[in-house]
Length: 65
Image (cartoon, rainbow, N blue to C red; front, side, top):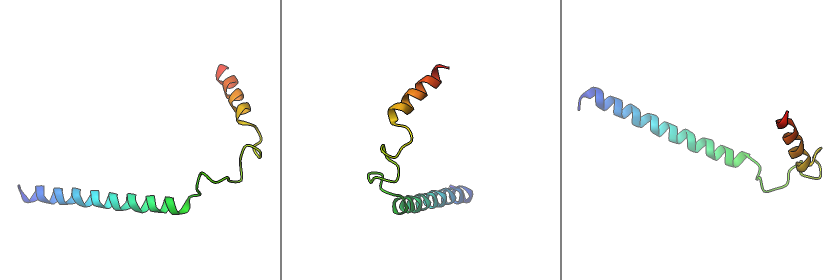
């Protein structure tokens, strides 16, 4: 292998490692700063303006146009 090939492999390895570190940091940030989706938030079926069934019917009607 030439020196150029070794440098390219090292750069590729460094970029892969950097991407893995960034991916891990982003995943940890999202896990720490997002609300658990299993807990009820401010909006649920009782506080929604339209029920899910009504939204479905409106969507089906609009798709027919």
